[in-house]
Image (cartoon, rainbow, N blue to C red; front, side, top):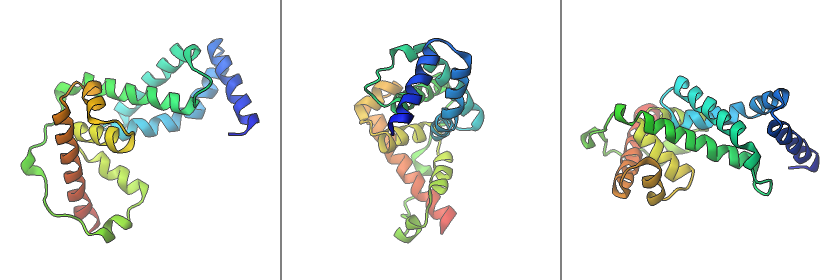
Length: 181
């Protein structure tokens, strides 16, 4: 990030700390797409993702004065968005669809199929996973959390986290084969 961009970001953050509406609006517009992409990676539909976006920006504006300027602002926003998505997951945990192990396919897709996937294809496939599987997969494979951290974040056992990850991978293999064969 260039010095001018960093200075602009610092001014924007200062304006948000001072509760200047125009700066809050600029920050919202600047990071809306980024936060929505995170929400869509964790949520079952756009409406729920929008709730995560709203919750994320409320938390950003409520706690922006605690932002440590030594760290990445975008990374700080990402962490808040992921935590909001996990909070949304916890609120709706009782409504989750539980996957039966017999639903998983044992056929492995050919490597050539995987080489032809682009990011939109991957997001589409992730969107077809049940929420529990998608959330564990995202936290482990994309965000780099370990099973202990996932179990603490989501209120599930470490062995459950491992099981959900294995099921997510199994389901993704079946989806790749079905959609791209």
